[in-house]
Length: 323
Length: 186
Image (cartoon, rainbow over all chains, first blue to last red; front, side, top):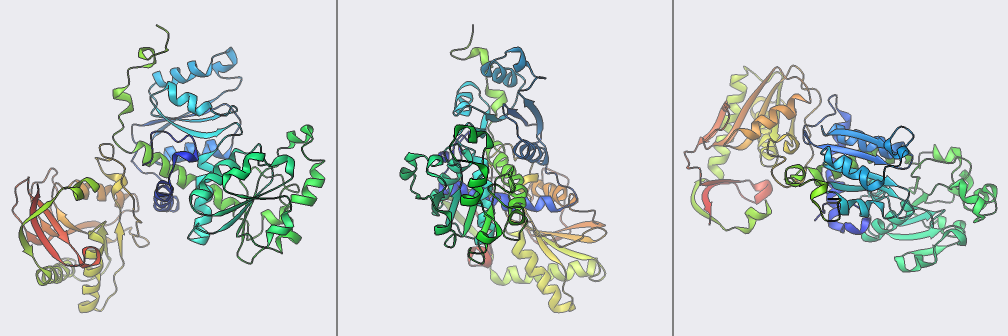
């Protein structure tokens, strides 16, 4: 059963994931027709609460909600919002709730912020990326994109390459892929692979060339350039030479193997420009599929008799709230 | 759906068998062509779940006696239902309405016509795909008790029922046999 919130891929069973992906498959047809709107979530309100910059995730959620006829509020914690006046996360959450939102899509720099939010509000909470913790909807759209090509995720060999330590995308994808029965190998410099990865049910390799020809999917993570100052790898140039995917390396991959990237890409670092534009690359499919997967999730979470608004007593009636 | 399956369905009466279903569909198929004065512009669209195989059977019957392959497809109306906010989200199936329906005569096909709410949802779903010249409705069973001013153009069998009775249509493509049953949940 898909629960009230989606905070982590741990919240989903293989059956839940399959249901979300199957529903997304039906919803993707809507994108191809002249009238791209469905009346399903009329009267529901979805708030994008973003404390970190985002292009594709925020726009994807906004469009997904609008395609289902929900109203959308976009809140970015920048100079124009009351966060710049010092409003706390909790007060912002209660303010939004008092305006009657049914779901809050939250991105925050701190791991665990969506869990905290879910304890404060009656609305559904969907994690759109929290710190170095998780980004479950990215994992769902990646699973969808892989399944689209290989039909079945069971037994597929997926390599996730790059900065695993700081990557919420990697964490969510590992959980999702392992749940669906794929064989995952984490690849990167030892400084960027967390020691506890051994307990995730995955293989670890420090040598991309030794695993590349065995992979069905090569998933490249963005090199977070700000990490170079932490001296976790010598230089972006050396990173590109050892762990970047260029066309020479790509030529050693299986004929039908895919190249994926969550975006935004650093062309010439983790992925060469011609690789990102090759037929193997499904980077733009990932973006398009993200819309369908988020529509599916919003429908499955908000489509039923959840009656968030009518039931909830307002933030000040709750325990821990100011009297 | 799951909850309904858990309750025991007690059959009171078997109203139609395989031959009755077959004859009704053949008659409906002829009626559709007759009312349209030919097969021009006809598109046959079944409402999922059980309208979809019925629409296929109607289209293939018309192909059999008119020698014309009509475009046919299936419509999932779940996202257009007026009770979408009242019941838990249901799984979706593919909508496969063929190409362009602008200016064509779309014949909607469903198994049971009851409140008319499914048909209303189908109107909305269809009109988001295009602007047909006309929409007609063919159903295997009309059991009455309409909530909305909707009527069928072609009916396999009119079945007087009480509101606490349940009408079930079984089709070989889904249920392994063709039958129309009246019963109730105990």
